[in-house]
Image 1 (cartoon, rainbow, N blue to C red):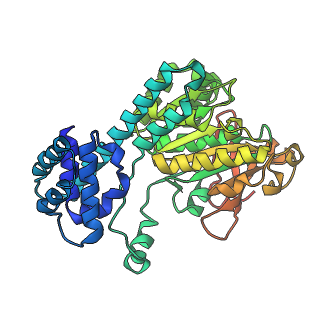
Image 2 (image 1 turned 180 degrees about the vertical axis):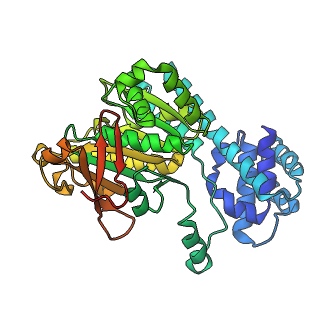
Length: 416
């Protein structure tokens, strides 16, 4: 029996603590039969009475019903130690969460040991991982819930103050009121060789210039090439210039680094990573990223085997958006439109390859439209074909310099 068990039981004597945290705890979390029994006694009292605190005398009376003298005496000894002053909400929450996490982790270790002692085919890795994830994600219920009438004005004001990651493209940032917020997913859609990766790199470079921390997963292009493209975009110079002017390049990188941002590139080529692997790599850095880019999500896979491709897409896109909300970062990816969209004036949702429904999962869908003539003129049009930022679906022209990996707004007043 650990001291933490006694502290938890003592805190649960208070009615407000029991009402808030009892649903997180199970009798199995306690290490011996006697602490489990006292936990049950406390629950019995709170179910009957609306008092501030369970009297120790009540617990002693219930323990007298235990027939075994040894167990009865141990219960009485435990009850005598359940004296604790009322503590702050933060103290109680932290103690309860850690107690629950430790109990679940302990059970995961015991299950792993039991499986290792058995036959090889009894080791269920997913079951163990599930228990560990359950332990790490224990959520303490919040008691300060507000109705619409209490927080309407507050929530409206926070629309303009919630953290966002700008794209660096003026019209897109105006449409999203400053960039895509944390916990949201943006998707770039374009035909093959029409600037999907260039768009993602421009978004990542813009965040870097703003002092944001960026993690870029490249599932198609190797790490070296991806980094070279970022550097070209950041200092607006082609590769030959970068190769011939290393001192200038390093000086420019040092200036950008002083703004506080950082960029890491993860190369995963030749395999189809699951979102669990993506999450594990993000967590391995031990830091909080503002922006995570996956180039591109359609190359990921799922643990579950589906017969239909659309089911795979739904799980991947929904899972990545959920991960962005859980880890508090802005998410961007890209998807390829079908070959029939190569020279279309406007690429839209009907041109998405494999599964059109994935665009419905995203908060912002940006379609790169470029005819052969526009490509020759280094122009393209960006069509906001799906959005949760208003009823408008704007389309606007941008300048494209793929030698320098730059996609930028036209100067104000310039029309093409």
